[in-house]
Length: 421
Image 1 (cartoon, one colour):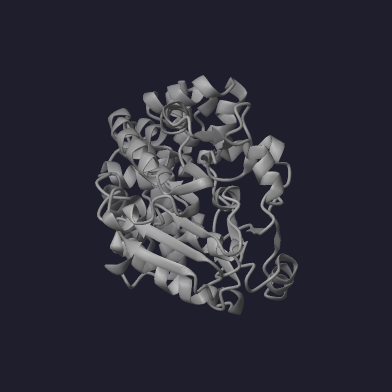
Image 2: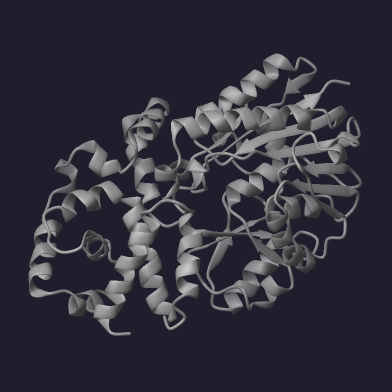
């Protein structure tokens, strides 16, 4: 495609994602389905530029004010992530001169808001939790790409053998630093056609997500519930931990998300998973299991603000009001899930959020209102699951707390309780 046409398309995609009326990944996917003429490199340039605009939206908007022409085009030029020679050919002489001027601006001398590119409510919350040095380290991770983590399906493969097979396919991989079933790959190699992937030996899953599943301590022959299963990443991890025995219920209110679990489940070789769509957290199908379950994982609906490396649009699409509304839902789901546990059963509440309002606030309130549940030390439970350096992953209160800049995972939180006998 001619560079001018490619830049025009990029500006159009930037315009669409900045509407913020739908998740950026779905907008990008729809855009590509409408422009099948784009090649792989062109798609990469468009997608990465759109995400770069979202990551540093305030900075680019400020710098773009000094330019001329449509704003979407100016933003696409400033955030361009494709091949430099393509942009050079697409720009006018005036645009090229303007870009050179903007590149000479000292970013470190700019106001904090233009450096961190976060809404005030979010930056204030993060700064209240972190030192100044750690806050800026976290901001840096939001502008960097996330590594690709895989979970080894213990029912089918061993980590060492998978790493060797990846090396044979010229894909450099290494064990994840914490999870005993994780593998980390830099870059974005095509895995979908590898026998390791098609045969279900591995699944794409962030290391932090793997740790949440491991915290449940699920074992052979147990009855386990993944209360908010979604597309089933943690469900599959739990099923493998159970060595394909017992019964594993995957509940979710979204039939569409559960449909996405089916092909992954087929690859995994698991036959102990029962995926069920429910109407709400008090569905009759849930009530029938009260007092019968050994382990329940509640990966609660949340703001998703721990995934800003992958989903930068969330910081613009979420709000304090949305978080307040989520708290009501999180509390209701957690209370309902707790009723499933038999005496001695374990409950894990988890989010992919960095907000205390969705994490410690919810967990502490649950502990206060449920004296029949005893908070477990996450460090001790993770160590039992074979997790390395567990002491670096846990707060003084015994909760799991993962930060992108500290642990190179997405931001996750989890608390675990045991029901008194």
